[in-house]
Length: 138
Image (cartoon, rainbow, N blue to C red; front, side, top):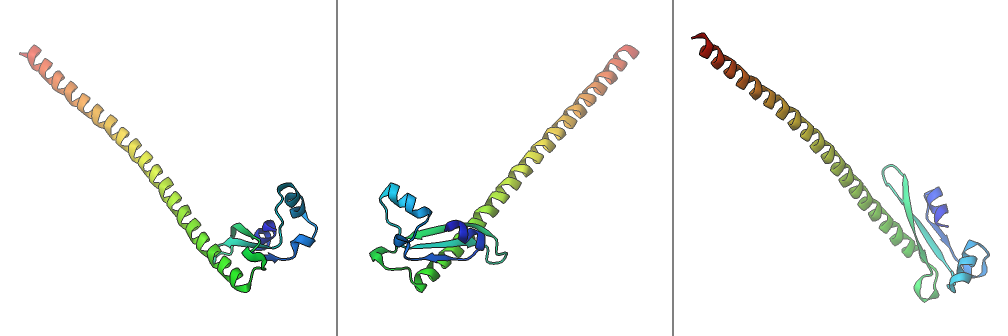
């Protein structure tokens, strides 16, 4: 049922499952739970329409069926969940870019340190060469 919501990108609302055969019956028999009603809601991007997941509600309290108001509320929750998922995804991308930046920065500083070290070494060698030249020249 949740797979149908993900595949179709539409909310799936099914009632009367306690008298209907299906995969839920095997689970009900193993667990002792009685599935009466299901509300499966896709979590999708409002702008792109991509489905990134879904959530499923079973059996409204009190034995009643899920109402149109319940469905609207569940769909609003799904929209908010997707907004949070997007924020998490963007934060992860920023973190990854920051890690790459620091890695490049570290390599740059290492290269600069090597160049600086070689420059200092060459400067010291030239001073030594100059000093030795003056010592033996004169």
